[in-house]
Image (cartoon, rainbow over all chains, first blue to last red; front, side):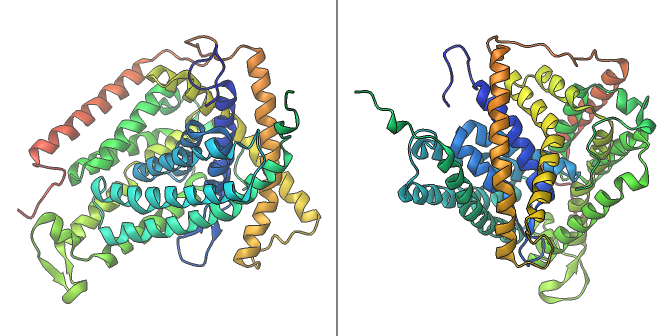
Length: 187
Length: 278
């Protein structure tokens, strides 16, 4: 998180990005799920946008956006499911570390970086949806393992697809619009 | 998508005690009840929580058409989850309660009283907080929420971000509709006939303009807030901060008592589960 000397904690930009980000991710989760054909499973474009925001603004913004957007979405359906909300926040946090190597605002995007980003998102998705969320359901909600792992694995696959396809597209589209600083080197 | 975009509290909700509760009280009640309800498996306790939540719902005087869609969705979602829980491990209830009284059937899918009781608990866990949340959804002004969050002790920057997001949701929905209409005018297939791949491509074509417009929004708002020196001080006051009234104290104290009872029950039951089969 790049913060000015005067501001402690989140920078102003991070605060605004979190606010706007929550609104958009909530919209995508609530109104634009794409059914995959398997019952009760949708491709969640919100996760792709969380990954994009994380890659531009870093782990703190990623985690906060994921947490509150998931919470609001659950509340709008009348039922907060805390283990998955927390798992989503952890995913946002992990994916935010892609900011460190992508450096979208200052350096050009290469195939290698996109590969690294996708490697990170696959690992983060597997850890969060394949392990943390189901384990949370078993420990906290005492649900049978088979059911929660089925849900967890489905979520893992659909989120990997969502972030891998849509998230990657968003990042490449955004990178093209950034003026690269390398043209302005000091002699 | 045809959701009501304004946040105004409805006419029939004015002057109800649930509308008069401050944002801080609502957040505290919602958080603490949903967390204790998540952990506890004591059936009687969950029933008491449900009754407590229904009190709020009663006070909000919601019309059936306001909540109908949501309730159907919740019912479908809950039913699907319960069926999955049963299909994957019909003997799970017996594992939990340590005994097995077969009610009907045999073999893997034998339905035991324990399993039924476990499913009843699960059902309660899914639905106990729904009435409370519905009541709050229709009676809360979002600005109160941010003020309440910062009063509870959230860092004010996070509270502010949440307030911003609630302010932006209507904007974002409007942007989204405009972009989607513009793309349709350019011949984008919007019907449900399109396959999965086309749907993904289509939504990306809507997402990319949305990303750029939101990045602009972030930049403009950041500049405006920097000009007003946001974030230079350690603390911040809120226009919407409200004084706690008698009703707030009443609700907070009763919630506190409920939580204390819930925690006490862990000792009484000797764990999280209430076991009638012993």
